Length: 207
Image (cartoon, rainbow, N blue to C red; front, side, top):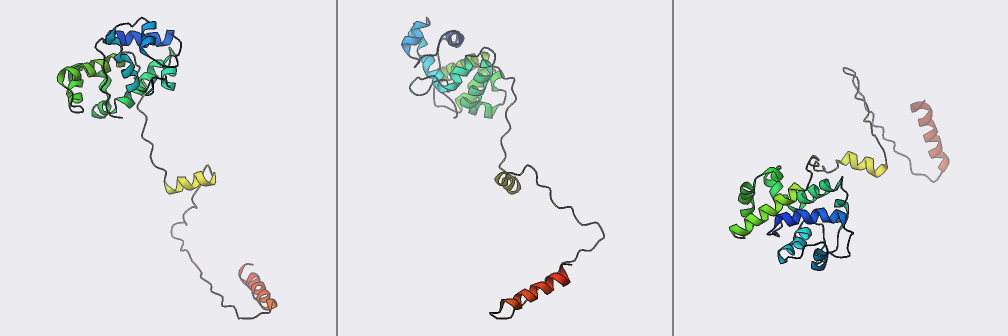
């Protein structure tokens, strides 16, 4: 996703609102009126909605997403927020996998290369990110990038086979032989001729 450019002037109220999410019910939409219902009546609190959209807690219409609902869990919620931040602020974590531990000044340097915003806004974006990180739990290790399946594993999946064991190699020092037998059948409409030929092959080669 890159880098959300949404921010709040009062990061303290942003953290408080995240706490209120757990105590309040899930609204159909998070609106200015909903903010006021939870006690966030200042016009400076309205950008909270844009911040939540930026991290994937709300969709474009302000409707709470599954991540918003999962965050309400007091135990697993902080980890849900950490995963959301790693996705939303992927550019920061690409520059430094420990971006959540960086001070604001360090974050400003990275953010300044990702946006055309002025220094004041860059600082507010960094401060907003840091405030969100304080409410998150980054103890989960980064997920490994899934490798594309090899041709063999693809065949296993397609066939529903749990394990395919390759044939053992021939013993060392034992030569292997390969016979290539070609049979030229005569042109005839008498099926008994073919039956006699195949019967003879079975008796002499397959016995």
